[in-house]
Amino acid sequence: MYDCIVVGGGPAGLTAAIYLTRACKKVAIFEREVFGGQITKTTQVENYPGFEHISGMELGNRMKMQAEDLGAECCYDEVIKIVKKDEVFQVMTANKIYESKTVIYAAGTSPRKLGVKEEEKFIGNGVSYCATCDGSFYKDKKVCVVGGGNTAIDDALYLSNICKKVYVIHRRDSFRAEPIKVSSLKEKDNIEFIYNATVEGIKGNDKVEVLEIVVNDKKMEVKTDGIFVAIGSTPNTDILDDFVSLDANGYALSNHELETSVAGFFVAGDVRDKSVKQLTTATSDGTIAATFAIDYLNTL
Image (cartoon, rainbow, N blue to C red; front, side, top):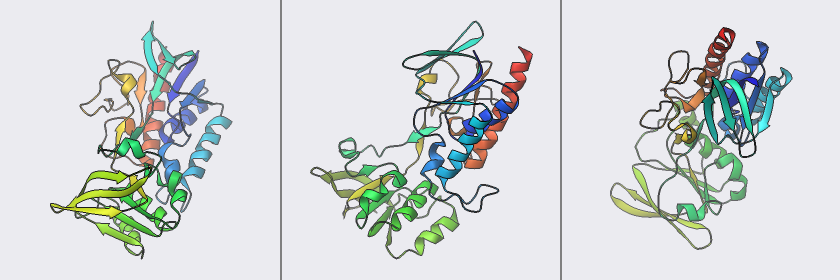
């Protein structure tokens, strides 16, 4: 029996585990992909206090090591269902059922897809949702980045150091990303911006060859070797349907203590309904959720 099971090994979940273990609670963290979460896909983190420059992968690894050194169990496994019976949570993976007195759900989000014809066909053959994962495959080639937020600009900056040409395709005429990031990107010689553009389709035989777009009501084709999609994300809350209250977009609802509609079940990070989703707010959520989970445990 665990005092708390943390679902999701990103900054929110790892921070929660650090606080819980320091309070002498027995903790396990379940992560299905990479400990450190989405931050590991960022080549350079410059807005986390205490670190002028650090790679997302290194920061994520440091958080994981700190949690493990304090006694948290880090498990690579996917949680497929959670139920509560007799005031005990049963956290189920494909092979085992774990029991815990509390749960902090910090499973984050998944990249949103373009939703156009042929997208699924070309995943892994020219369509990617992670520039740092797949960028090296496009050395000295032409690629497109679709999106206008921080992730899209970060991806374009990263790819500009690898690729011959990078097209940044955005549906608006201005970016949502931080101005300092956009300014850095505009200094690059191999970047071309295409504004007021929507993606209509993808063409190619065995791999991506052309991205079809509409710019100001005019159809265009961009010859490209790869397409990096960075248009937002959807919360990983499928397993929470009919268990806790979610908003219309699938984000988990919680009170100021980050407790959900189920007593003892807390949420943290991008998976919950909130307006600001940054590394610092994720660690803040982890702190808050863990603090009130500890209070809850101390009343049992």
